[in-house]
Length: 128
Image (cartoon, rainbow, N blue to C red):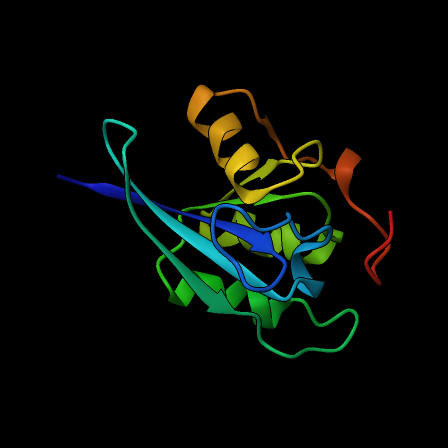
């Protein structure tokens, strides 16, 4: 059965109960959730964020791509990483209303999350 890997920026220690990281490039780590075609959670694991400078968010973009991510749920990010995800074919959804990783994941599974567009991007530095 084919699966889908969803990445969600998270606060330490990661996992479904952790707080959603406010900005994709500045989060503590990513919670990766592997989901089966029928919507069942198959595996939950954490992936450390990679160090980068402000404006250098392509390192985390490539890091997620190299770890098999198909979908990213984020509350905030700049224009450059959004374009990078789009170029790599990683679907980015806006999860800014979710408080926890589980809330964001549940919104995804229900089909409630909107596509992350340029309307949601920030100027960098973790703020909007």
